[in-house]
Length: 604
Image (cartoon, rainbow, N blue to C red; front, side, top):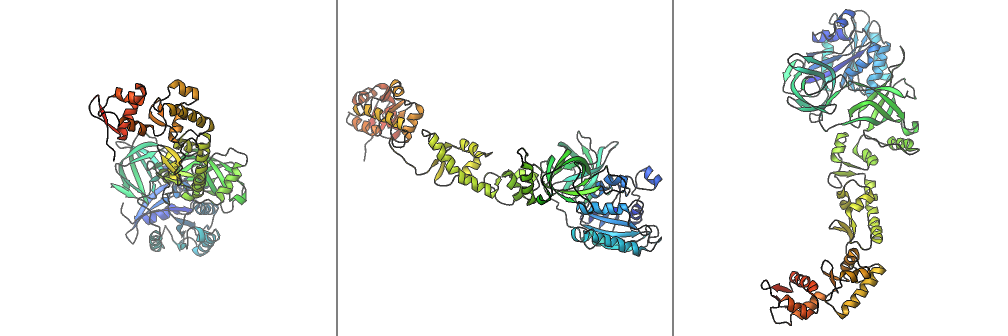
């Protein structure tokens, strides 16, 4: 879609001339239902468009003004960045004018203009001054709509329309440029079937790009874009902000309020922690059951306050169905059950967490409220709650990572990471004390002890004097030789074994003797690591240095020699001689001459 296309919604009291004004500006009929034309009021959303003097095109979303159709009005305004607020000169400010104004402020609409219609029927000045004053009083000059242009017009006679077109040009020129690379979230406001084409949906694309052939998701199900239209023109691609119609292929049943989204770019959730800001004129506490509006969606929800006013109005919303949300999204909370004349737009709920933690302990809700009081819609706030999150998790929650990952795409809350770094040495020391026969703490055991989701986080925490080798964490440079580093029972058994070997250095103890001494595989492994024993093969241990002594004795034999000759010279059995000679081969002290003979390698 070429730049220069914009979308503006109407707002205002019923029968104040919104549709007439749109018709006069565009030459198109926005009302699309026979009942609407018969009754002379807008019931459904209508759409029309025109080219402004600058050459930019503007599409209007014409919304109903009757109080019974407030939900439909919100569906039209929700995804739109700007509004044309309409007040009739002959009636002035009315109840739905006020409710629409409250809704716009609560939704955070930031751009708009004021059109006082029916200037041919009454002096527009009083209505214009009153409406402008109400916009200022409502705070929209400070927190929305900005310096609102106000014009008097007549849709019937055409008075002021040229000025209104020029004002619309200035309005759309001031709109912030949407990000064409943003993930798509297209809220559906109409869905129908076209013979020969199939399913068609329409909506306002606020940002991002959609192209023919794209695969999107609807309620987690894949759909493919077969064809695109924008303002009744076939296009191959479109970028927001734009009115679009999409012909879809997929096993779906789309409805208003559902959203087409970029796969893997949004968190579909029915639970969200929010900051509640009461609407102008509304008073708390909020009812427990309300309707949440975002985009064109209107979903029943349960509201659970988490704390008092001191905690900043934190609450937890439980939605009747999952919605694709990001941090920072604003939901409007409405009470559809209130009577005529009562304010139904009650509050704005700003999303602070789309994966909120469970509240199990007594007092957990108030603690959560205090944590949310200082929260913002960014990765740092998320990490203070979740402590560790991956790149992809942050992205689908709407918070691109702000810093470098600590390990393998993982991001950590700085305070939590510092605490883990301080805990790891103590965890390793305690494990060594509890498992003296092991060569170090397994990385997996450390992961479990620290409650980490990924082994790579453990290795990223290792700092000198700790080191990682063979999947275990040890203290670098810690060398304890002999029996001093062994538990007392093991050291005593090793000393008894060394006494045996002192008399017959190459008669390695058999399994029975080892068992009698209490030296099992773990004890022997610890003694070997401590340098108290020499292992030449599984189940064959000798005193340290026995291999060098054996090589010296074998060097006195006529070279080359056989296994039998070596066995006799060493005074041992074939069970020991064969693995001992293979050990000497590996160390380079002996070498094979042929299948039967070996010889000692010359030294020096």
